[in-house]
Amino acid sequence: QVQLVESGGGLVQAGGSLRLSCAASGITFSRAVMGWFRQARGKEREFVCSSAISWSGASTAYADSVKGRFTIARDNAKSTVYLQMNSLKPEDTAVYYCAARLGSFSDSATSYGFWGQGTQVTVSS
Image 1 (cartoon, helix red, strand yellow):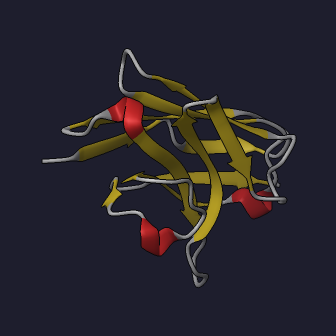
Image 2 (tube, one colour; image 1 turned 60 degrees about the horizontal axis):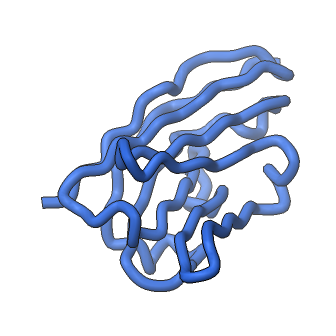
C-alpha cells in the first residue's frame, strides 16, 4: 500500500519561505517520479514541479510560475521529497499535494496514481 504523507505547510508572510516534506512508503522510491501539485480554492489542481530519476541522472521540471523560487529535492535514502519555497507570494496560497507515479516524467495530474492528503500553505500580503 502506497502512502504519501506531507508536512510543513503553514502561514507565512509574502516574501517568506517554507519547506514541505513528503515521506513515501510502499513504493520503490528511487524509481518513482515525484511531483508536487497545488490547488487554490475554486481552481483546478495545477502542476508545480517534479523530480525523476533516469539512466542519465536526476531531472527536475517546474511550472513557469514557480521557476527560480521553488526547488524540489529528493532523498532516496529516506524516501522523502522536499519542496523548498522561497519568495512566496499571496498567489502561492493553496493546498499542496505530493504525488507519485511509476514511469516517465509527467506534469499531468491525471497521470499520477498516488497522492498525499495535502497540506495548506497560506501566504499573507
